[in-house]
Amino acid sequence: MAKNKTAETNFSVVDFINSFVDKEQKKQDSFRLIELMRKWSGFEPKMWGPTIIGFGSYHYKYASGHEGDAPLIGFSPRKAEFSLYVTCPGNDNKNFLDQLGKYKMAKACIYFKKLDDLNFDTLEKLCNTTIRYLNEKHEIR
Image 1 (cartoon, rainbow, N blue to C red):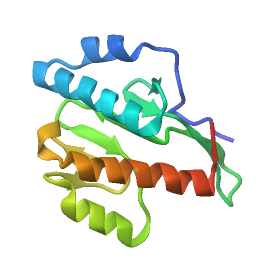
Image 2 (image 1 turned 30 degrees about the horizontal axis):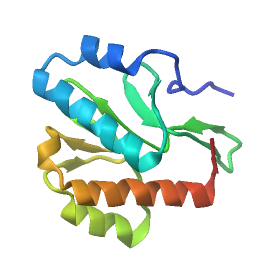
Image 3 (image 1 turned 45 degrees about the vertical axis):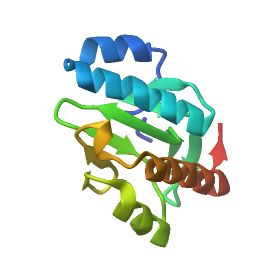
Image 4 (image 1 turned 180 degrees about the vertical axis):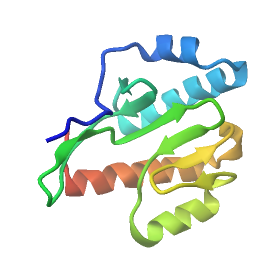
């Protein structure tokens, strides 16, 4: 079975931001998002793969037999935009996304340019709902 590309590492989150993020506003947004996600999740930030900052983790197993670990919530301060890793199934997802602010949606994540583009109350609800959902469906670590 293939090994997951995105796994928790021991790299420093602060060192990653300071070396990878080249714009001062994006650095400030990254550190603010870390504060918020730490508070909302109750977990310390960890690097997942080379560029994802994740909080907590859960173990998943698909019917195909593929299994692994993933962060409960997380983000990546990519060059062009932030990638936000949260999930909320069903109608809650649409309701939260309608109130989230200025973003673009892809299959597995939400893209936004700066933290001020998002509604923090809605982001908190989205993160908390994600954690609650994953806690009901998977083993949280």
